[in-house]
View (tube, rainbow over the protein chains, first blue to last red):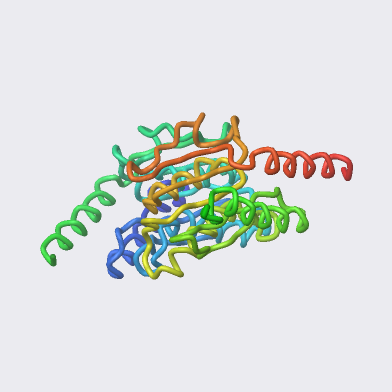
Length: 149
Length: 149
């Protein structure tokens, strides 16, 4: 039997978080952190609501997962995030020594790949999982925002 | 009359924060954020106490300053931090659009300069202010830590 807990399964959970951000008027990015097929942190972007540039989904998820684990290192954990992490979030993930990062849509301008943010040698990163869903949600957000202004 | 509120004055305040971190057994890094010669945020590294890799002095100071200002952008603000910011903190400072960063000691291995983290075009950065005091404190911390283990 196939394992139902694949990357698509968990990215859908991250997308649900992104949709909650959308409904709150936040740039719709969502994240979950998983250990042994179990979600230990869920978060979505809250930079507007909290007036805080550090309140990206990933940052909150890292803090929540470390709190759950009782330790600051996210060994054996996987982060699922709907958008490629920025320099700040990739920098935080470097410190966390997380095992794996799975992202959805690419962010060519502000993402960590083109900006060459250093990841921890223990960290693997893959992208493109449900990228169409993630980028459609972002596009819809910016179109609606433009129409409101 | 000379302005007493120069870079050395505020870096001393950041060093006081670093000393508080030292006393708590944290890697001694401190930060303050200043607007119009007024300190609006003080913070020190709390990664061990909070079990949270994101709890660098700068990150907490950014959040506190934005909270004080009631807005997420740190225009016209200067961050004084005793150690060159890492990728995560420089990435957060990028989003904050802070006007100026003044750091003490350099961090050649994990600092944002050698790792080429992108800063906002509005941000100026200078280093080396009270660098000896900042690096002596760090050295003393690691020597004491080594002797304890």
